[in-house]
Image 1 (cartoon, rainbow, N blue to C red):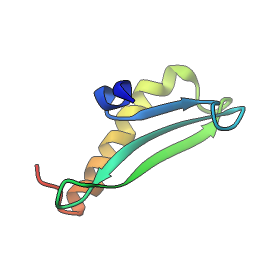
Image 2 (image 1 turned 45 degrees about the vertical axis):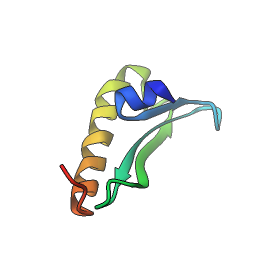
Image 3 (image 1 turned 90 degrees about the vertical axis):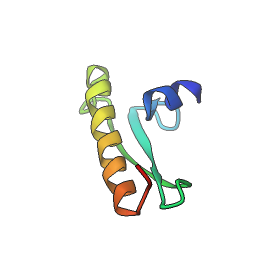
Length: 74
């Protein structure tokens, strides 16, 4: 949990389902409360472990845009 908070996203490597990796980042509302998350999931064959940092950045950016659209304070 702490690592996810530091990085800005959570990463899961085949913990919920064998052969699937996931990355998710939080979405915040206008009160800066957690409103949900946005993420990706893909098979280990199309989601290489080396892609984790790049995909993490993309998920954080997307979550930030959604949060901004929901009025999250900057």
